[in-house]
Image (cartoon, rainbow, N blue to C red; front, side):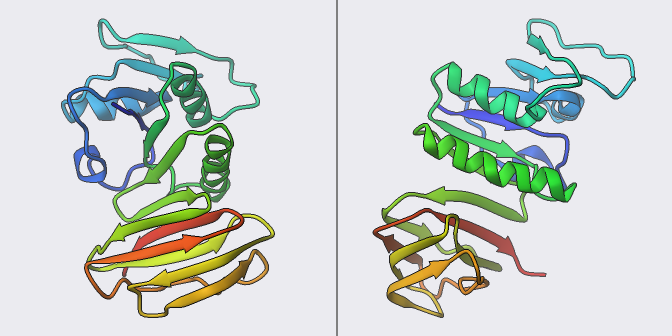
Length: 208
């Protein structure tokens, strides 16, 4: 069971962006809920400041949490914090990568917030997917027509091995001063990423 957070900034339909299971907990950030309702998805919870000025008619039996317009957290971050408060350690955010640059950057920082508290957060919009890795090993399945980029999220990440990719690496190091890990490709059925120190930001992007 995981939490699915739907944001207003989505280039594709929700079901084309994220896989939603019957037992997933659906949260809509602010004015994304009409989009969800139109696509046959009824949220369990709606969170936001609802600052568009348009009349708001909420679905019945859906929990609503209102916040003031002037606040420290974005609507998406409010959703993440509430999902974590309710005990969810796996969160998928639909959207949030193809709108305003400042909001996109805030959503990438949100990944580190979750990781610092033991919560896995993935942000995806159907064309891009981003998540953070802690030291260890992970296998990523190939996704035809998509690139794989690996960045150091802190000052540096080291002991990095990339296998099953066009540009492999063994016991290497990445720093946040140069994007050496940009636009790699998975050449087989999967890629293996292993490292010993730091944080890695993984971005999977559709070729255009």
